[in-house]
Image 1 (tube, one colour):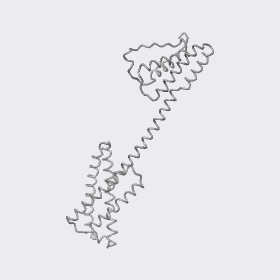
Image 2 (image 1 turned 180 degrees about the vertical axis):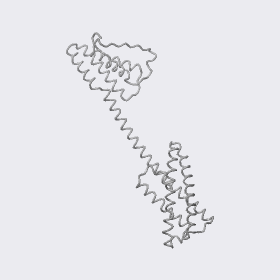
Image 3 (image 1 turned 30 degrees about the vertical axis):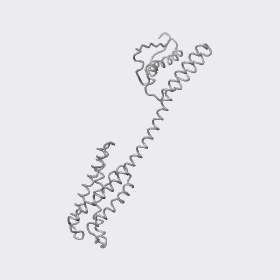
Length: 281
């Protein structure tokens, strides 16, 4: 009977499931074919059990292939009912086809011949329906459990990645070189101009406060970004002196528009890094 979700199990699990589900089904099927004679005749029991095994294996592998195909085509959560319907329908048709083939094969071997009656066919159909629903339910439950477990593992992995990304972003935003340069500039100002040093420290605190607060936010209003960039440029101006200058021209109607947080800082850093900052140039 069907092993619909072979791809999610390893070889040992698949072999165990095949033995547990298909073994009893093959014995019951032979009992329907031969009745009590199946258990009373030792030779018949061995030959019939060995004869039915290739058909059971073909059913198993065929349904595995069909099941994987259906799950690839109907992989969305909203396709669950369609998936179950088509999986069970294909499993029933496949199982009936191979069992009827097995009936024909049995008729070719004198020891395995039995009377084919309408009652026998009805019993076979009923058995296939019951076993298919039972085994299909077991495999579906296992599949859903496996999917749920994989989903939980993926969510946990995504959370770890998100935390790592936030940590990396924080390390990037609190750039140690920028911090050391700012402290160096502050140290010189303290010795030369305490009033300027106080203003520098005030703007520096605004810059780092904004960096830390916006670490969790993807967007910021233009007004907030402009206020931040003024404080940030104050630090650059203190460091580079008259060799850098900045002009800001924005319309007030755009103040509440949003843009990626700290994007203006990237623009300014690139402008400073890829240009020349000399007193006469």
